[in-house]
Amino acid sequence: MFLKIFKSISKYRAWSSSLEGSIGFVPTMGALHEGHASLIKKSISSCKSTVVSVFINPKQFSADEDFDFYPQKNNEDLLLLDSIGVDALFVPDKNLIYPKNFSTTLKESRLSKTLEGLSRPHFFEGVLTVVLKLFNIISPTSAFFGKKDYQQLLVVKKMVEDLNLNLTVVGCDTVREKGGLAMSSRNEAFNNKEISFLGCIYDSLKIAQNKIRLGSKKSSDIKKSIDIYISNFKGISVDYIEVSDLSSLKSIEIIDRSVLISIAVFFKKTRLIDNIEVII
Image (cartoon, rainbow, N blue to C red; front, side, top):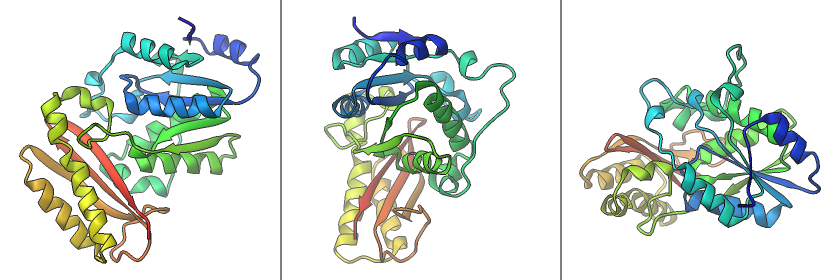
């Protein structure tokens, strides 16, 4: 195995200080899949060295969410990272990231207030805090995030811009299962039949996208069409459906510009999100 594994900040920094050229970084919570692999491959093709982190961040889960049941596949993750050609893996302990006297968190006050931020008020504070810490530890020149978490991508980009961080955040297209379900570590909870069944989520977004392209202008009509379509699939309950400005993520009533259609649902107690862009 050529993959270097670091659990210590000082040891990682000692190693990375000798690197020449660009460093690509892919932060993850483990249970890696082909979506993660696509981000990593993008980094490898773009940067001289690539570093991946695995850390299940407790601060982005609330008390009633699935932190204790978040999937872990440590051995499989190591094999995948080594086979792809990642240079280093950073796997910090919780106490390394959040020592007992830790008392600093980071908030974003605009982009994070809709969609996931509205449904999960704790979420982005936890995300931004850990991502900033990881950026400071890894010192990447580029960081790669998937568009499945579109709002997260924009919020991280805003943090980098606002705090004058010296790196580029790269958004990468969503990778999907054969039936259309966006790849996610949470898909570990489902069998193949259920994964195929859940392709209806993306189908509903594609139908809505087509309606807009054919001239539909009312967001309420678009959201209603998605809700009606999803209601035909037993066991799926909708958390939210939203049509937002593609840049500000503000909810809009009349579709007269490029938009993001977002959806969050529950299936078998597992929460899933997806989105689709409509460029006008």
